[in-house]
Length: 120
Image 1 (tube, rainbow, N blue to C red):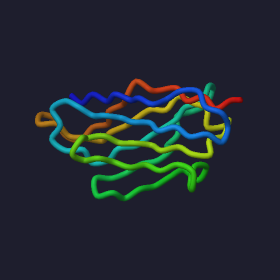
Image 2: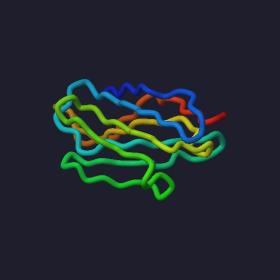
Image 3: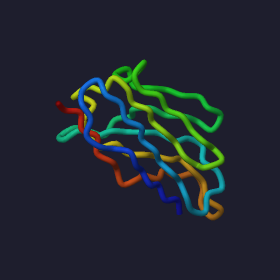
Image 4: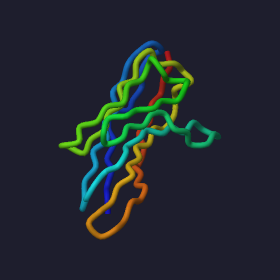
């Protein structure tokens, strides 16, 4: 199994910044990709940003130029640097990892979520 623990959420004013972290642990053989999703009340969970093991990234159009995803492969940790935050960025942010363990093939794993609230 793979466990994901997120941190860094909170309350921030519009235009402010936050940095989310997500650390993976467990019997990890390989992590293929790590991603951040968000889910606002009453809406579906949506992809915010993703990064592969070789560093390739993609972003939702709504966050391009404002958010940056990065990854420390040695620490099995992914980060999301969020700048110029808007009220519409308010959501629960979930970390996802697509990973294989020493006993299972590639599967999707999810963190517990961290709340980000952008409000004055």
